[in-house]
Image (cartoon, rainbow, N blue to C red):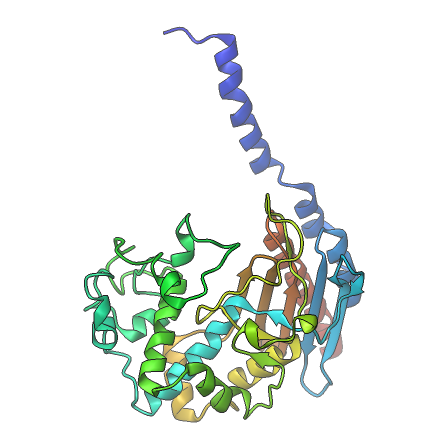
Length: 354
């Protein structure tokens, strides 16, 4: 069969476009990666706005020093409100750290067992979630369950989020497992949605109250909230994104699923992360349980909101970064900005040591 010139062009142009994306990535990413590293964090934060981010908040906690905040851009670009280091932010999946801490506490109190199955805890899901009788609480905490991720469903309504938890869960029910339990790792928001239900059942009341009493109150985290509905909208950073048909402020979108619903300031997240890593939040027994089930850092992503919360053991430093822009290649830009900030801190640390 002959191939015409027109057909060759139709085939070649998309292939060439794909090759160009691979060989020549977007210039803002190239420049963000390869531009000279500035001397100060504030210069790097200022550069983040030049890379297309609407606003950025960075919190740095180093030993023996008062925490330092860096900001650039906007808290609300429409009303020309500058970025506020103490503003509230949707921390998305960083919330999973708080859920995992709550689970570790209840396991230590023997109110939960890591080896009991989803079928044991939520028998109504037998037949609705494959392998429910083999998936343990430990596997769900570690994202080794194989349970489908409800946010991977192409029908999940990101811009009209469900008002009921059962409506989140329906996007994961009656679907084949991703893999046999405990044979692989695959991140799934459904795991933590179900863990939230299991915590409520074990407690006999909302796990939100337990998180308040056992985590937030002891650490005096007065600017951390379990749900967006608890927050004064004026205190919240406005979120923006590159989404066709969804331009403008995204802060009113309310995601209530456990492990993705919390709102906090950068400082509150930093205090929590320091306490989680240095052992002041948990008893020795609780810490041993936690270490066996989850990690000590996290990132978060929701439409309009990107967050990174890491503790850097080598320099004993907590760095929290909030960016109120998502979509397109903004996640890559955000990660590059974060890595460059950490390089600046490492450079300063090496100079001090010398």
